[in-house]
Length: 161
Image (cartoon, rainbow, N blue to C red; front, side, top):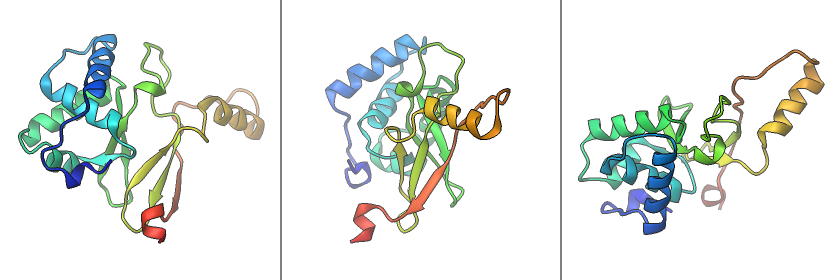
């Protein structure tokens, strides 16, 4: 999905319904901005910058968008990824642990395209439990991770052509 190419982007109904459920489950007050932003992140195949989201939601004030992203991040429904370009990108984070546990919500790695700067989550190859086991095997017992973050850099499929 390329929301930047669609200035009048409207999230899919199924994503809106999922966003509403996740907001309720996280005890976050539903606002139209939070629902729209979370639904867009749920639809996304990659992480988006604030500017990407602002370009997509032309009817939303930039401060409202920042507040919605901050709220979703604080609630664990989205996570914020710092890029080498010093631009934060956001992606949905509810599947990564927002069920009321104390575990961090951002327990996986990313692939960052060094040509176009897009960031993709690597959920399937980097299960948090496997990474925690690797930490214990490498360093021994007693070490506890609070966050797992790694980035593989290269060219995405579009840029590699």
